Length: 314
Figure 1 (cartoon, rainbow, N blue to C red):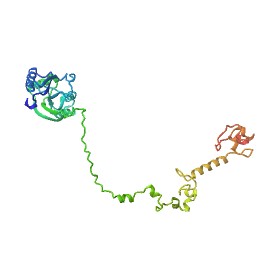
Figure 2: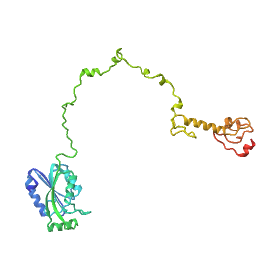
Figure 3: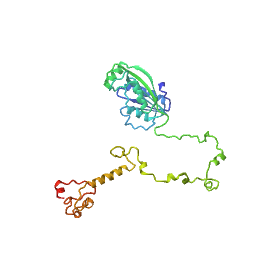
Figure 4: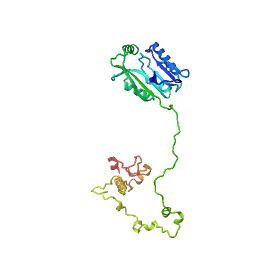
């Protein structure tokens, strides 16, 4: 009992399950009450009812689970988290649990390392293994009866974990030093700073010569450049003039205008001597011999295909 560090005035919780012998449980509780005295308290909880007990947080200084001789208690992640919640800051948890010596897939029994990790994930610190021993024949039989688990490689380990010395959600003011530290930068000479400072009054000082921006331009810079000089060297080269991609020199617009003129000139001429300058508006603007007579209106420059009979009649 001295290994648990229990002293007078402490609040202790003893967690048991169906595998715990009742006589051993009663004997343990009697010894704990003698250690805690009248100022302390010993609470006994069944592990299956612990989550429904609704203990207030930070209720116990020490929690003992599976410690009763002959117990084969398994601790789930929810149970470990609840034990960490009801522990007081700096309180300790001591538990015994059967573990596997090798990793077994889909096994309800953990290894010792996984059990330590589970305690750490529940919020406890300073998790360590205190004792490891082989299971007695009675304990092996208890594992088979109460856990429905069969294995020849089981051990019993005793592990402890400590709750941090603060409660979850607590806050504390940080002590920040307000003393100004030297930046380590050299001091600036006031005379030098004034020398490189230009104020509005200095701008009106006759001793300050300001350069007119127009004087920076030569007469040649003011002339409008020849569009031909802006054309790229490779633009329009070859037998067939072709504007380059993303043309900005004006060749693309020039070629588009030439194409439009060619389309207009290729249209047949009517008896009135005009092409489609008015004929495109419709029959109201077409003469009696117009080859477009009877056709719908079209856009200027749009190519209209005429049948051979229409051309012969014209």
